[in-house]
Structure formats: C-alpha cells, structure tokens
Amino acid sequence: MPNPSAAQVDPRDPVALLQYLIRFDSVTPNSGDALDGVAGLLRELGFETDQPVFSAAGTPDIPNLFAAIGETGGTDNSNRPHFAFAGHLDVVPVGDEAAWSQGPFAGTVTDGLLYGRGAVDMKGGVAAMMAAAARFLDRHGGTPPGRLSFILTGDEEGPAINGTEPLMRHIAARGETITACLLGEPTNPDQLGEMIKVGRRGSYSAILTVTGVQGHVAYPHLAANPLNPLAEALVALKAPLDAGTDLFQPSNLEPVTVDTGNSAGNIIPASTRARVNVRFNSAWTAQSLEAELRKRLDGLDWQGCSYTLETAETPSEAFYAPPGPFVDALVASVQAATGKTPELSTSGGTSDARFIKDYCPVVEFGLVGQTMHQVDEHVAVADLAALTAIYEDLLERFFRQ
Image 1 (cartoon, rainbow, N blue to C red):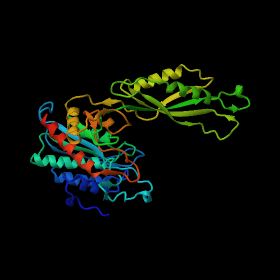
Image 2: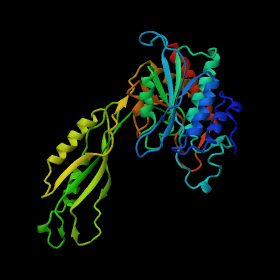
Image 3: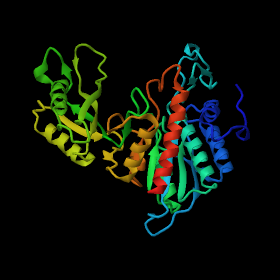
Image 4: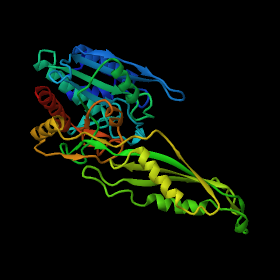
C-alpha cells in the first residue's frame, strides 16, 4: 500500500500516524525514510530537526533524529525544564511474510487491532508520543512551557553502535540539558497500565578460554584435557551472586556457548572456550563483577591447564530512576487513563535507556509487548488511544510541577 505524504497525515491522530510509520519498510538498518517522514511531521508542528548520521568500522551508516521545540530557563532548568521522548523506528525482519494474516507493512485495522511490523516495538509508541505532543502544543499555543524534544534512532534492533549512544553525545555537545526522558518501549506484560520500567539490570559478557595439552584419549596421562576444568569452572561461575535487592531481582550468570572445534573422536583437544553473560543488579558494577568471577576462577584446580577471561563486549551498568516527581507524575497519568496502579519494575533485558541514563533520569512505559517481534504483530487501537492520553497527561503534569 502506498504511503501518503506527511502533509496528508493528521499528527494528532495516533492511528493515522502509526499506519503512516508502519508503511515504511524500515527493517534495521534501513530506517532513513521513516526518520525523514517523522522529521517532516515534527517540523510542521514547529520543531527544529537535526538528523546526524553516525558511522563505525564494519557497521552500516545509521541516520538518527533529534527534534526540539521551546526553550529552557533558569540556571538549573527548574522553572522551564526539558522533557524528551525517546524511541526507535527500525524494526526486526518480518520472518515468513506468507504467514502474516495482514501485510506486515500495510498498517491494516481489523476488529479493533492495527497490524504491522513495529506496531508494538516500537512505532506504536512513537505514534502515541507524536500525537500527544501535537495535542499538548495545541493547548499551549504551539509553544511548550519549557523544552520538548524527540530522540529517535534507527539502530536499536541492530548493533546499537551508531544509534542512541552517539546521538546522546551529539545532543550534549549541542549544549542541551535534558531534565527527564521517557522511552516508549513496550513495557506492559498483559494489559496497558501494569508496569513502568524504572531501571534495568546491567549486562556483562565474557569469554573463558581454557588451554590444555592435546593428546590421545587412550593416554590421558600424557595430555591435559581442558574440558574437565571448564565444566567445573562453569559450575563455580553459576553459583549465586546475590539474593537481589529491593528494586532488582537476583543477578544471574548463564553460559551461552561452549566451543571446542574438535572434529575427531579420539583426540583430547588442546583448548576450549565458553561464553557467558551476566545480568547483574545494583549490588555490582561491571568492574566488581569481573573481579568476583576472576576470584572464583583463581580458586579452582585447573588440572594442568590454564585459563584466560576476556570481556566480550562493552558492559552496561545497572541503573534505575529513583522515586520522585517524574515517576510520580507518570504513575498518576497511568492511573488516570487506565485505573491501574503500575508496578515499578527493573525486570527484562536491556534497552537504549542504558545510553540515556548517563545524561538524565529515564523511565520506560509503552504498549503491551505480547506480539512484539512475532508474525502478525499488532496493537489494540484502544490501547494506542489510551497510551496517547497517558503521554499527553504526563506532559501536562511534568511541566506543571
């Protein structure tokens, strides 16, 4: 289905906006047209737009968008604060397109459900943000009582190298100071209004390599089999790290690969390696966690072998937004629209909030996530309307504080 021009889309209507966004085939990393479309709509509302493209060796160039309207004021921005909506417009591949009951990029509405890749994760959230902002600006004569912005990337579902992390550095280099940010990822398990994500556990990945002495399986005394101490090492590493905290569930380590590359059935291998990932709570930093893992490994009998432990990727630290006016305002907005008191949670995996948290308090609240990344991904039109109302009410409460 051809996409209408931005001029034909009512930016106050989240359903029309979401249909418009879904009709861009923005499978990561090809989100440039969708970001251009959003930038055009926001410019019509009076936003100034900045669309930096970031590059890194071995990765695709990624377009991003920062759009802002209004001014801040006061030495600490307390009387004219800066509120930011954040999200992404890239989506995961559709999988088996023939298995979809509706076209994955058609934006079809059937029986009160709007279908399409990204309907939940997270073009639906972006559409609700834009509609809320447009309505909010209408009530304030086109100028917010402070600064209102959008932080949008095309590299959330991809490597996340040329997206939100460099975009936040770029925004800071512009001299922007953000008071608070809401990321519109789908946070609700079953019904809208159940859960706000006020933080996330950290993530640490490492590769454990054990080196022994290759030999014939019939003469093990002439070799040193690295698989034997590796098995004991994984048991030691998986021992409980903590019992959790008031805000976070216990940290957990999981082996994700064991690779030996031994093609023969009668050879003791020379080396083997395992990759592990730890999701850790605020009782640890990445540095203290690594020190604990090395302590456990150093205490083992390596049976004539040696080991190395190497960090596999840049760790992300655990974080949370402490209770306060921002979180309270969002809770009140959710209650007003849904009648539910949302759980304040730090569960789940990582998100781009891990990059935003270094610049301002950030919380996550969005749609019900049951169909994200699935065939026939869809959102209830009623939920989309309710989310827009929540975001609109949050803006009023935030700027009124």
